[in-house]
Length: 308
Image (tube, rainbow, N blue to C red; front, side):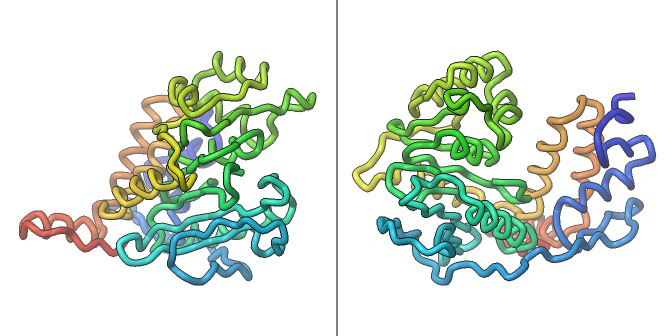
C-alpha cells in the first residue's frame, strides 16, 4: 500500500512497471524510450531553452571584482573545454550585493537550469561564486557540485543543499540564519537540511541560526570534503573540478539514471525504491553506451561514450 500513497508518478507503481519506467524516462530529458517489453510512447518533453544563451569561451571562470555589474552578468555560465569538456560552471556574480538573491538572478538561474536539463553534452555542473569570499542546483539530471569558498548563509546554503555534492574550504562559513530575522528558511532549507544531516541536528542548527566553518560542516555531514584555503581563494572550486573530472569518463546515461534512482528512491519505502531501481536499470540496457562499454572492456581500451 506504500506505493499507492506515494506522491505523483510513484503512486502508479501498482499499475505496472511500464508506467513507473515512463515516469523515470520523463525525468531524464527529451527523447528517452522505454526498453524492450516496457517500451511505449516516446517521451519527448519540450526543449526548455527560452532566449537563454551561455557565456562564450571555455577558459576557467573569471572572478568578478567590480561593483558595476550588469544584470545579465549576475550569472555567468561557462562550458569548459579540452580535458574538462562536459563540465559547466555556474558562477554567481553579484559582488555589490554579496551574492544575495534578486528576482533577476532567480530568473536567470531558472532559465539556465531549464536549458541545461535538455543538453545531453553536459556531464557535471559546478555551482560557485565569482565574488571572493562569498558562495552566494537545482533539479538537474546530471551531477551538481557546490563549491563553497566563502560565506554561504541563508539562501546561499539552500542553493548548496540543492546540489548533489558539497565541498568547502575550512575557512568557509555556512548556516541557515533566517531565525535571526524572525523568519524561517524559505528556499528548501527546512526540508533539505534534515535530509542531509538528520532531523534533530537540523532543528538545532535552524533554531539557533548557528554558523559552521568548513571543519564543523564536514563533521556533521553537511559537506563531503573540506580543504585548507589556498592563496587564490578557490580551494573548494578546484576540488569540485577534480571530482567533476572523475565523473567525465563514466557512462553519461548511467550517471543520469543512477542519480534519478537515488533521488527517487530516497523519497519512498525500500520495496518501492527497489522497483524504481529496476525500472531505471532497464533504461541502460538498450543504450549504445552499454554496448560500447562491453566492447571497450573486451578490446582493453578506454570507452568512448556518446550519451546514447
